[in-house]
Amino acid sequence: MTSVHHRTAEIEGQNIFYREAGSQRAPAVVLLHGFPASSHMFRHLIPALADRYHLIAPDFIGFGFSSAPSPEEFPYSFEALTDITAGLLDRLHIERYAVYVQDYGAPVAWRLALRATDSITAIITQNGNAYQEGFVAAFWDGLFAYAANPDADTERGVRAALTLESTRWQYLNGVSDPSLISPDTWTLDQALLDRPGNDEIQLRLFRDYPTNVELYPAVQAYFRTSQVPLLALWGAGDEIFGPDGATAFLRDLPHAEIHHLDTGHFALESHLDVITANIREFLGKVLA
Image (cartoon, rainbow, N blue to C red; front, side, top):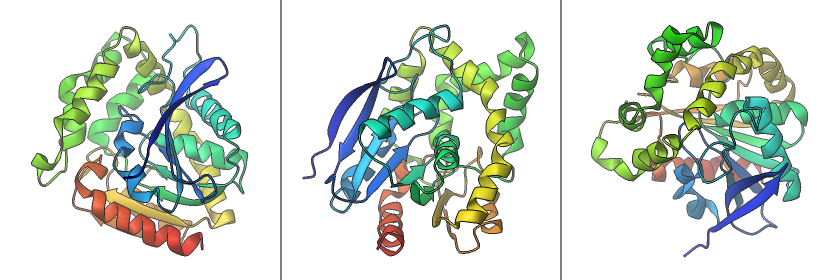
């Protein structure tokens, strides 16, 4: 059995929870989770890769078991989440690393890459966008309307994304066999979303989301310049980030590997073995 350590580090006055496994002498892989999840989404992938890689999976501020200060105490934005993540990597002396990104993890990783363009050795993106293609309008139109004009009417719409019904839907949408998805997933996420004051944290990040889209031209330029190795493992049934989001990477990274999987937004819950095998083959080639 592989040992997975559950640790906490204080970064800029905030406690950051992270999972760690594998030899510190091995190539590093940083796993960045999405909304409304946490490093819990990597609980099975970490031991599956730890024989060959050094895995680090933090919880973002406001998520999982990391600190969740109020918006008056912490400036919730994707830039601020990146600051804390970068601080953790510095604390752990991780300067070069591959990343696995999903959903919110993608814009954090893109910011890390733009800050230090030679730091990222490879990218694995699992329903983590870097192009406007892939945004499913039925999910995103309400969020972008709220970010552009945050009032009582637009807020009512996005608050629906913080409910148990929505969290459960995120795990089950596009999944051909829902019996593969453990209810532990959405139950844990919802319990953490329901903490007093966490709704305001999430609303701040919703309002900040357009800054990620504004960054896309710079991110795409980074792809063209660096030709960083990229593997897209995409839940093709995802009704948040559709399959066009995966194929769009080929525009700037023509050698990217693209795999559409018969599942949804949280593909690790149903396709762990397929994803693990693809990652091991991909990283085995590009980090050799």
